[in-house]
Image (cartoon, rainbow, N blue to C red; front, side):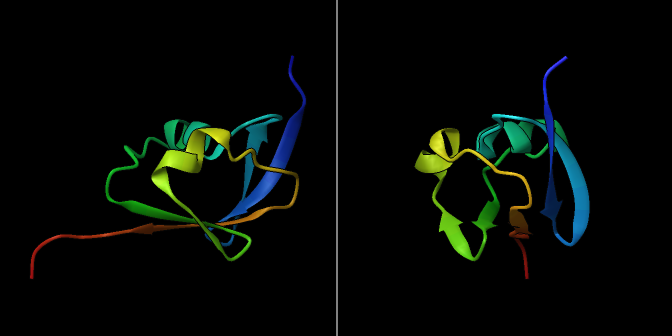
Length: 70
């Protein structure tokens, strides 16, 4: 069994396998990643950087979903 870390996702504790990237987090929570902005420790993670941005124990992640329409 792989080691687990805990991050804070939108203010709630979220366990993740150690070595998870931002793109892995999106898969785990079922987000497609197209209409979302990801902020890790107050730094925006651009879509092309998500597979290479690995999450660490205690990271604060904000997932902002853009809703269309008016």
